[in-house]
Image 1 (spheres, rainbow, N blue to C red):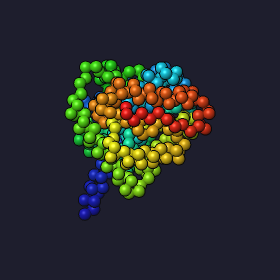
Image 2: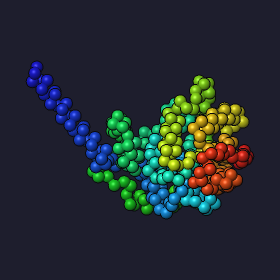
Image 3: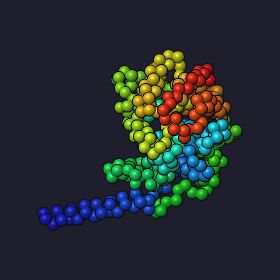
Image 4: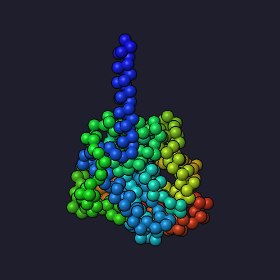
Length: 356
């Protein structure tokens, strides 16, 4: 009996030591995973946007943070109009706010400004909805992100990598993305971090309508549930991450502004629900002293302005939406975003062309 216990103890001891060694190698970045093409695409976009930020970003830069903002907002157009450095730090919304804000904190400096353009899911869902392959992409593009997490979060994070069906084989000292992947993707991400539209791309109207209908139904149902349960925005996990990020920004001298995400128009029957949730979101930001630039109807567009899904504007739509944001900033003399007077000013955009 004692012999069996010793063997069992020895076995579990070896497993524990191997687990600790593997944990250390993964967290330190010595071991990684070989991703598939979709992961390489998303990871490469993140790497290219980080490179865009590093080049001639200058002092007092404005960073656009969101998921679909690469399609919805033109940093290049804003920089030209406002006369300050503007960079688009957009990542796939499915990677989560925690990772988005980690990337932002890496780049932000005192005197910078942030324009939040976050999807509705971050406000209305009880818990953040992250993609199964989210940990893999964030690990591949920013291994240092794992070291920012608590020990329990690191263990959970690594466990998610192991159980993910999207994970490829182990690789030693992974170099991801490859130079060829970067070269292939570079034409589609400009030096401001914006998505570059391919004029030869054709979008099936039927598929676009299906995507719009699916997303609209999803969000209206989530918003309706929020209202029926009399739940606050503040109780959502995404909102708590936003609050922590805003506190960090204020502590480090970074100004935070907010716009609603660009999206397809909601129907007249859905507007009642959307209006109520929109007011809740505005109240949430007002309570944490974040300035808002737009009302919820100004951000909704007809299908002719959409690219390939509910959130993505086409080039014409992006130009229109960016121009509205620029005009609202200039009309309030907010292009001097590093001005200390901004911190004492409530900003409300009066531009509300609901027919866009």
